[in-house]
Image 1: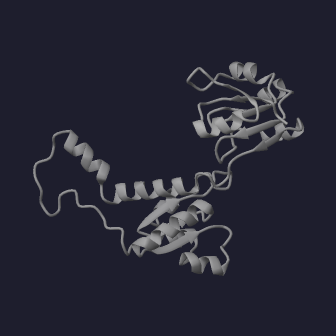
Image 2: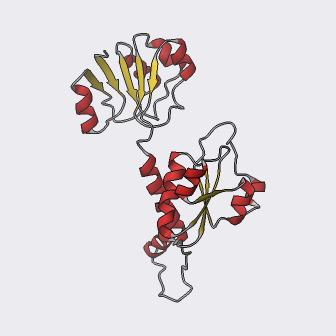
Image 3: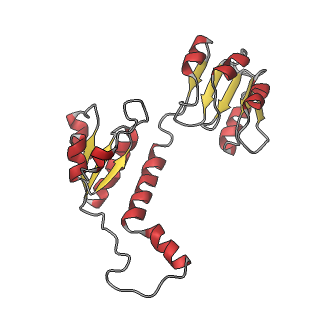
Length: 227
């Protein structure tokens, strides 16, 4: 059992209280992301490290903290943790998959509505004192209901976005290297398209593919020409 835990950021009181029931917890008190030497100094004598995406847990950090048994990320991603070095050192690495799926899908729709209805643009205009009165074409945005949305990357977040699109009677297209099972496509009312076909057909495009070597610059000059 891990008795000594270092937490690199102020997490929620609920999470912290749960952790404190089972371990002696020390928390980063600097109020900022720690430098590497600070991170090593506070983690060296601990059994477990609870970090966030802003902490770079590289090979140097892992090798400098031989007593660490587990490195846990407070979030979904783990690109900031050197998995190869952790595996070589026999350390467990875990995360909290799925915890941000709905939140990310909600924010996707917040951004989509913002762009479609020019909300932030209009807000900035008013704050600059440039409001001159209304006319039918002034700051005219785009409706969402009944339009076509193209989702690139149909993992958990992409599917959550698709579920929400049904409320606006939208046609849902998606591109993913691995197609969903037919039953899931029917449930989401989603149709697979090639990337170029999706870009040609969609009124709105939402990108939810993980960042990898394969997806680096997935959208470039040729893809943008299809829109």
